[in-house]
Image: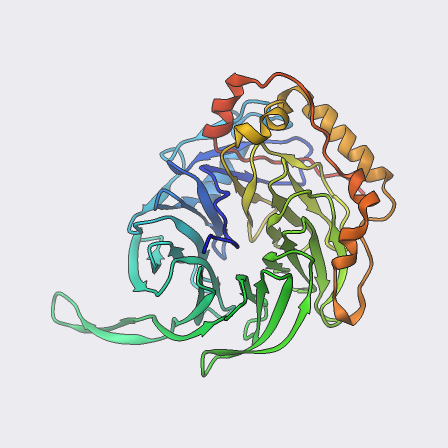
Length: 446
């Protein structure tokens, strides 16, 4: 099957952004030779990892990269039309992890071991890495081409999803005895697949445990717009579907949970171009929707304190909103390519993101003319946002159905982007396809 939850809308650009600043700063990490598929920070925020179609993974020194935003040679600018500080692979300490033989589709750091990283690939393997030692520690063959991965909150289990709509659960607590070169016997981790779940006639996209440490709740997003709520049995390594609800009119692609102590929200991005925001304590009721996107939403992410929700799609901007009201809290981050990877820093307001190479035949008139009208476009979008009544739609009761939002065409029309006619800037084509950008935007004071 063609990839769904992780379609190839990725890039060789990575951007790290620290909101809550009056002026914008950019950091550029030249990460890979080809498109970036996935990004993730480790639990302490010391490492930022990126995975690519070029079969490689890089684990960056995130502290050094963010510190570079304060040095004098990093340019302050309002957006992609200004010059930015480009940091090559040698400028920021990083580990280049080699071993996959095909596109690396997704990576995730362990929630309890900050140097442990798991990666899944189309080469039908899942690999575990020690980023501090810069080496692969274990490779496990799987039955299909893998596209998604998730850790349980306690770090004991990893779930792998492949293109055959099959989930494989891996026990990360198993040990085995091995002999060292000196002949001494030692105990080492021996992660092993323990169970599989095949979904028949159901398109499986992303999945996730909720954020409770010993959670038994496991959520699966499907291609028909539903969310399956499952009970996770850690002793048997099985899931049991106990409830499901229709969340969107299009396929549900991506899910994110509020990582703060409040743990009050989770968000779903869908093919119907909406982001739905759900309340956990009151029984999974949809509270608000973000309606500013016009194309399928591929990635959503909460900030470490749960105060901000970022979402991105094939539109030419990244939206950041207040999850309580769904109102935009800062200027949109204008980009020149579809976005497919977002990752907030776990300790501060810094957002990493990566996007696709520009589809010049389809999007060049809009994307390449951003240099000419960026300020005007930002002002127009702010005016539209301030003039729109409300900031989303209210709750949907116990049924949790967000379908009604897609019918509100008048509200959607207010957020439609207006293309700017003009001759494409051929010089900018190379910049669009070749750079890695990190942007620090300005937040709007309430």
